[in-house]
Length: 66
Image (tube, rainbow, N blue to C red):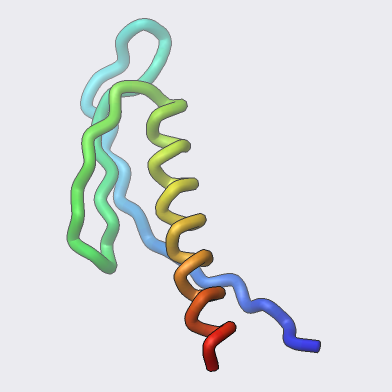
């Protein structure tokens, strides 16, 4: 039985403004040097979750082939 290893991802989060009881700013993926702007804390969480899910899915696909 194979044991899944959890990979890590590093993000830099810049909060530029607080409006309507939430944050606006940018998140940068350190490994990919990619920056994305967000308009709410919920959108920030969705961006981070999406990055981790995408990364884990692609790693699972690669490990299934090998």
